[in-house]
Amino acid sequence: MQDLGQEAHAQAQPEATAAKRFGVVQRPVLEWNREVERETAHLYPRVRHHIPEIEWPVFAPYIAAINRLKQQRNAVILAHNYQTPEIFHCVADIVGDSLQLAKEATKVDAEIIVQCGVHFMAETSKLLNPEKTVLIPDMKAGCSLSESITGADVRLLRERYPGVPVVTYVNTSAEVKAETDICCTSSNAVQVVESFGADTVLCIPDEYLAINVAAQTDVKILTWKGHCEVHERFSADELLAYREADPEIEIIAHPECPREVVEIADYAGSTSGMINYVRDRRPPKVLLVTECSMASNIAGEVPDVEFVKPCNLCPHMKRITLPKILDALCSMTEEVTVDPAIAGRARLAVERMVNLQN
Ligand code: 13P
Ligand code: SF4
Image (cartoon, rainbow, N blue to C red; front, side, top):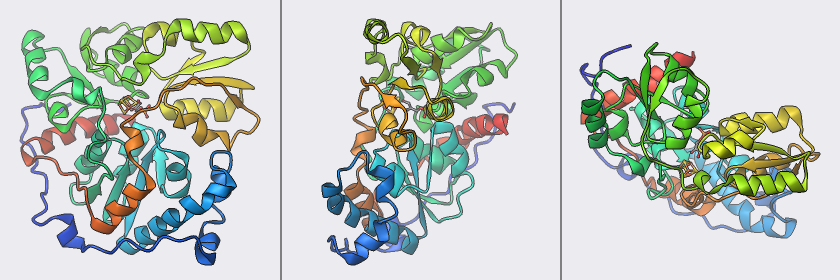
């Protein structure tokens, strides 16, 4: 593993705005006509369980316009598993959990990446693809975990725990990543923590993820008090009530949930781990203890599975909508850039994680 002190590679910074470099195009006229109907006919079956047929003429003109513009612009859409079904199934080129999106970002040929997810995900794509143009349809799509910690906090932790390796959840800003040794996601956190062969590791900023990792390893884990505002709302009592009502129900939780919630679950894993669990095991009745779009995105593929709510919405993920994606492609805003002073070190932390898995 390389030292954090090593020379940072400067991040290529665009000289002109993306709008200047690529030009702006007028938003196309959006209407439901024969052409749009024909172009989107193959997509409707993927979302029919979610969008009533009568509402399709509202969605389809946006979907057709986005897919045309993607080709025209040489752009790809990377979408997280929490995006709404019309984004996930109808305009995304690549879908996945945070780790999959980070890995796929390294293989993108297109000139432009439109990140349908939250800001740290777009930043990760930019770090791994400094020469590409990365757009996010809403710059305000943040994350409570990412906002819970700053680079200065990590520097203080290093002073307090000298020599202790720092593992940072990918749900953080580039500024925070730049201060850490390696990143992790929910799907590789235990492997990353154990990769140092150290007795003690700082695993920040998600307290619950850290506690859930600590339960699977002998490494002593130190953490931070950051929480996901979506997953911290689930409680053990709530889940036990569902299980009491139906003992056969399978409960699948994301590791950002509190420990007592994960302990009740039959399985805990990343968003893609949860999808694969349902896809492979086909539980007759399942409760996905996570963001609401997860169940909506997989429901069409597994009609034999009954999904039981509750779920919680991520207000940040829900900032991304079809109209905003279309506007981003027309106006070439909002462009995500990373300060060259931190980009090299932040990139190293992400690359170490990606390379660990390969
Ligand atoms: P995953 O890496 O499991 O997709 O999680 C990302 C996230 O933000 C969950 O809240
Ligand atoms: Fe952040 Fe939680 Fe939203 Fe994921 S679900 S983006 S961790 S606030």
